[in-house]
Image (cartoon, rainbow, N blue to C red; front, side):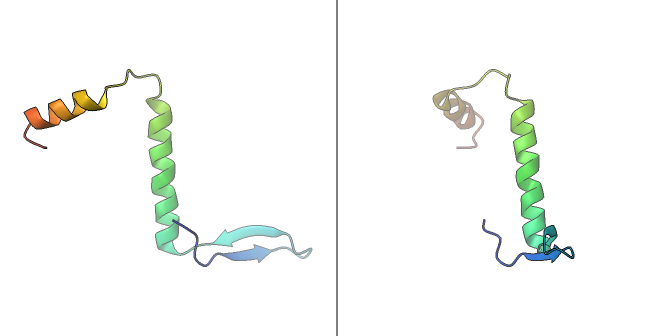
Length: 63
């Protein structure tokens, strides 16, 4: 996802102080942030191998 058309608000010295994004871009950034927070929270949890996940999904009829 690239930011297509950001607009900046600048102060009297021309320094960027804020940005305006399309609602869709803002929502996508919030979703990405949420995903990263979940990853960070679950970092210490044990991992499951891909093959084990596939077996579980097949067993549950989801794959």
